[in-house]
Amino acid sequence: MTGMTANRAKARPARRGAPGAPRRLIYLSLTAVAFFSAIPLYYSVVVASRDNAALAEVPPPLVPGGNFFANVARVFDTVPFGLALANSVLVSGSIALSVMFFSTLAGFAFAKLRFRGRNALLLLTVATMMVPTQLGIIPLYMLMVKLEWTGTMYALIVPAMVSAFGVFFMTQYLSRALPTELLEAGRVDGCTTWGLFWHVVVPVARPAAAVLGMLTFMSAWNDYFWPLVVLTPENPTVQVALSTLAAGYVNDYVLGLTGTALGTLPLVIVFGLLGKQIIGGIMQGAVKG
Image (cartoon, rainbow, N blue to C red; front, top):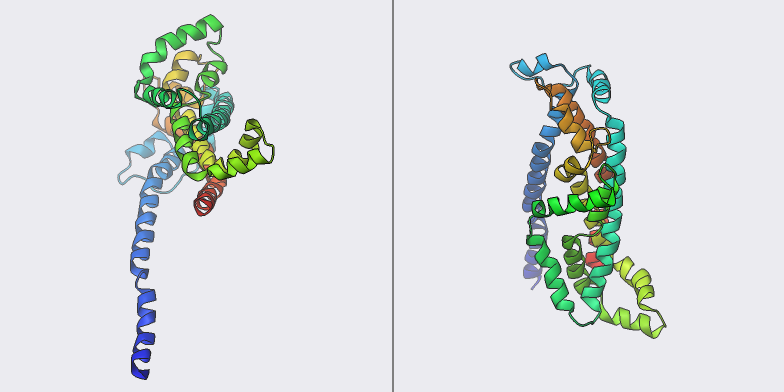
């Protein structure tokens, strides 16, 4: 018996150390994916810090040069890039906050409230995701003309204040993460439906709402077609300003990539500041669920 116990004790460290190799493989794979994903952004910074002659060098330059700030000044002299950055921050932030609020509110109603036609309305909402966005451009533009919103930020913010994807996403999340017993306990304590939403639903929905807000912010920031249709070159967003930089007879690749690097930098900063909080919120919500 003593020999068998000793053999088992010797075998335990080997069992604990066995998952080490798969974990190292996972970390190596993630590191490789992150490295190759960062190469385009890094090379944009390299080109943005040089002149057009550097693009013809063989092998291509891999180290940033000393012309970055001069190229940045050229970008701001060519297009109103500062105004474009401010407009994109305003539009993307407003849309992200609005989608988070209305999608959580609608998701709570579809997931936990009982009313006539609930399933039909949810099905209709999901069905709108199958309609191409381009089909609604003409009637939407005509509506913006009647409202006299063309050339303003209202034309970008108001039509995107709620999304079918956000409603479906929050409905699916709340149907699993929000216990019905928690709502019943709140009603016993005298909470109204609006009170349940603020004091019970919102804390539970915070991890998913953070992810939805990040995805919505990135989508609104990268939107190009609708801002190009409804805005003027004097009052652009970042994507419209970048298209203006590339609209000359001779393509100035350094100027275009400098603008691209400047337009991507806010997304990197936002994700760097909020990424850990979003991932931590997801893990906290998973443990609570």
